[in-house]
Amino acid sequence: MAHVIAVAGKGGVGKTTLCGMLIQYLGEKGKGPILAVDADANSNLNEVLGVEIETTLGEVREEIARAEMASENPIPRGVSKADWAEIRFNSALAEDDDFDLLVMGRTQGKGCYCYVNGLLQAQLAKYQNNYPYIVVDNEAGMEHISRGVLPSMQTAILVSDCSRRGIQAVGRIAKLIEECDMHPQRVGLIVNRAPKGVLNDGIKEEIEIQGLDLLGVVPQDDQVYEYDCDGKPTASLPDDNPVKKALHEIVDKLGL
Ligand SMILES: Nc1ncnc2c1ncn2[C@@H]1O[C@H](COP(=O)(O)OP(=O)(O)OP(=O)(O)O)[C@@H](O)[C@H]1O
Ligand SMILES: [Mg+2]
Image 1 (cartoon, protein in one colour):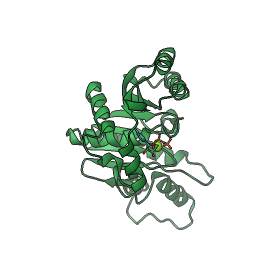
Image 2 (cartoon, helix red, strand yellow; image 1 turned 180 degrees about the vertical axis):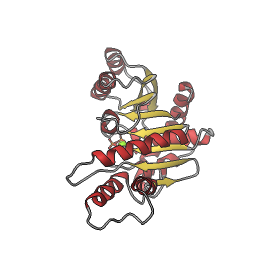
Image 3 (cartoon, helix red, strand yellow; image 1 turned 45 degrees about the horizontal axis):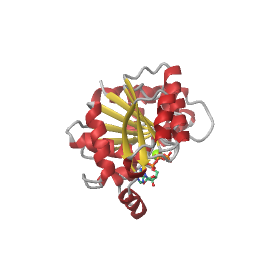
Image 4 (cartoon, helix red, strand yellow; image 1 turned 90 degrees about the horizontal axis):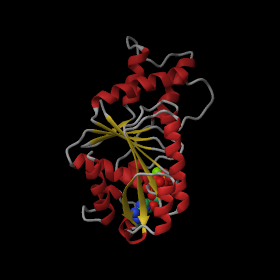
């Protein structure tokens, strides 16, 4: 069974950047194949990883739901509905050397998605047997996990910027994880974009107030910003980049 790692935190704190580097590092360590899941409706994990996306699960979900209602059945003769759904779901997997990327996307349109959600859940359950690691880049609300579409996680990595409000936000996410009975083995905090990689006393105090387990501190770094501006995948930064180095240390410490 896959070890599911979920990355969550307030908007814009660096979840996707760190998620991409985590996926890249696990691959480099020979822990692949990894299933990378972009569970943010505003998906951009593919850009950090440098892969092209053809379609999203949201689009496939719509296609299947539409097929349910269509008078002319688009399912090829001799193929069962479940098999066809599986083929279509698989088309939303973008493959790379060490990882496959699945983009949840958004679902527009009305109608009942219970049937297609059930299929999606079954499909994700199957994927759990094929990958040693599943890394999920989430929105703050962790919609897909809390609604049970995505499997529950073993490790939750909460990301915050170096601000009290960021720490308070992840404090609330930690409580949500508890309330939703997700029972991860580990819930840890990464403080990202710390000036010179150092935490000030106010932030340390807030981490204690929130009762969070600090995994490590990642510095603010210009090279990450430059890659981003140039449209280069940040996961491909050199290994001696300070953000990468700090993240690698955290991953090693977590024993992943
Ligand atoms: N350590 C860092 N140093 C400098 N810039 C960083 C660092 N980490 C992230 N960034 C930059 O911050 C911006 C937001 O990062 P990112 O998209 O990873 O955040 P996010 O939490 O996934 O955002 P969203 O909530 O919109 O999904 C990006 O431009 C990214 O390049
Ligand atoms: Mg993001």
